Length: 247
Image 1 (cartoon, rainbow, N blue to C red):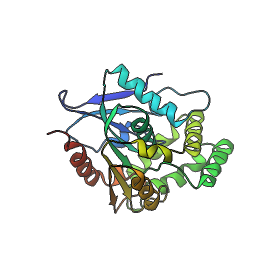
Image 2: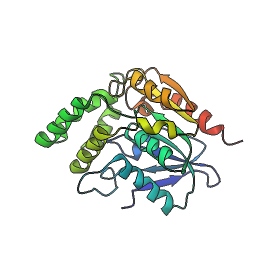
Image 3: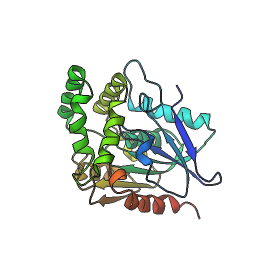
Image 4: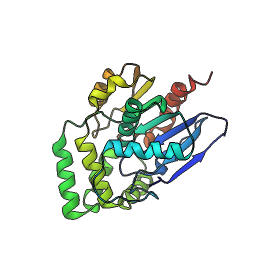
């Protein structure tokens, strides 16, 4: 299964892979302008990527990225991931040599509050995606986010294949990458959002503290999808972090 993807930007620039949050597509990065060759992809069952039948793990989702890199003949890349995309990035950096620099946005190495995910899984199974969409939007965005942006991402969420989405939620629930953090020996920038109630700053900080070579930033006026609400601020951080390797 090859993930749907786009590869855009200067052909002679370093490749930066952009990993999406659960329930989003490559549109997550539509407001970003970075001086790299950008590889965007959709997780399985999201956007134009094929759905799956059965369970999956974070390692499986990371395997999709490795398959994509092999297909494009990319030996080593930069990687930036949001939420689920960040979890995939941590696995890749810990278990492969394909990542030379890493950025983690509004993500965590484990989920201590598994009860919240259990409730979401039960509600999804009984009532479908529409029943959780508004709650998810309230976690993704602050009240100041433009309504048209919220509506766009809500519509994308509703188009995600439900069985695959459930499999990905269960993968997040079962994930524990804490022991892998010390294996990540590449420069890493970690970005939290002050108004992120899905992955609170303190949880993000715990992940950053366990990484051997990391720097933590906290973005103020943003919630879980901080790359949508604060793209310019995050672009500057990413440009500085990945640009350090260009000289």
